[in-house]
Image (cartoon, rainbow, N blue to C red; front, side):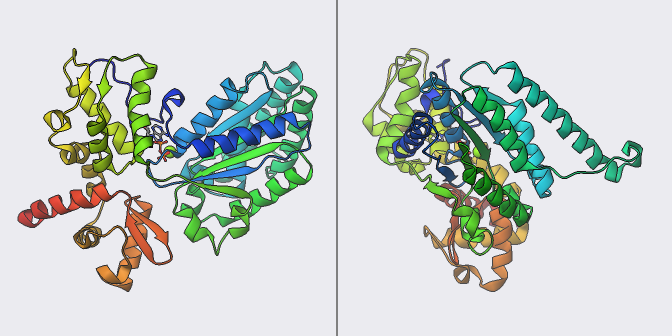
Amino acid sequence: MINNPYNPGIPVNPRYYANQKNLLSTFRVNVNAVTKSGGITQPENLAIIGPWGMGKTSTLGKFEYILQNEFKDTQTFSSFVALKPANCEDPDTFCACILENLFKVYKTTMPLPKQVLDFIKDELIILDTWKLSRLSVNSPEFVRAGQKVTAINFTDTLLRFWGKLKDSDIKIVVIMIDDIHYVMLKEQGDIFYNLRTDIQMLGMAGVPFMFIISTSDILYPIIQDFAEPFTRLFDRNELGLFPINGTMEQIRKPLEIESIPLSVSQNVIEKIHEITRGHPYFVTLIMRELLFRLPADCTVIDDFDKYIPDALEILAVKKFDADFASTTDAEKEVLFKVAALREDEFMPKEVGGKTTVTLLDRLIKKKLIVKTGYGKYRFYTHLFGEYLLSQKVRFDRGN
Ligand SMILES: Nc1ncnc2c1ncn2[C@@H]1O[C@H](COP(=O)(O)OP(=O)(O)O)[C@@H](O)[C@H]1O
Ligand SMILES: [Mg+2]
């Protein structure tokens, strides 16, 4: 088929977004309450937590879409920050990144008046000057005589910005920060402490700034003894595997929306659900492959195996081979031991004890293993375990 609406490589088109009804409803109710209350109701900050590929970025995109479409008669301002590890080197760089995004890649439901645009222009000049002074620390040619390297004042900038937005009748500002766990990977806990203070000060000043963070679930177990007070500012929302109804919606919705005359039978949906256990990334990946394999005139699909007899192989080519190649021999050995357990969860002592913990930490950073609780781990997807079992045979032959 030529029209293929499934693409696992990018966040889902918000119109195809499936499942997660409660989460979307939490967001809608929250925005509605804040924007209709005339300043009395404060926004609730949200944390979207989930392992790789479970729909974090897609969810933030959906929130943005909801603001733009369902609240188009309400004045809103939102910005989306795709955090990179380089933005988490220190608290100032982090704040500069958030502010730069806020002023450069925002979305509004109304044209911004001149006074707000002027404010944004001035703030961007300040940020550029700051960046230049930052560079000058390492490159003397940039140093300008008498220039002071001032730190970024996050709260103050946002309060002044709110002053302008309020005059323009904006009712809510939504700041979304995607992949905030990079802060942990860079071991920059100060960023959390500072951000917590900033968010609290904004709350105390009564300004309607709603912060939404997304993080892989590595953050929450680690953060408990680290930046626990920070996490208390957020309402936790965990993204998990889809139930069968969620998978069904994920499969059928794009076809309906794009009026593609293809009907996917219940047993095919069940088969895909069984293989993927409702992991949205892999559902999309399989559907993409399936549609490419169908003849152009196909209108009903009720035999999955006829078109996809080799699901694991497809997943291997598209994803697991690269995952596997990213590991060292010592890490591979641990991975094989874990796979051989054939369990949903495992403890380090089952695969070699204390020394493995360091290896497991490295595999967490490579996003292949997820820490599920104190001393408990699992593969980021059970399919990777199955792949490893098939790989082990080849690996042993090769050695
Ligand atoms: N709610 C959803 N509805 C439909 N597809 C989804 C949904 N959540 C995730 N997906 C699919 O999974 C893929 C990975 O989602 P993404 O948002 O990039 O995950 P994450 O940011 O958690 O790594 C997307 O390309 C999309 O195909
Ligand atoms: Mg993402």
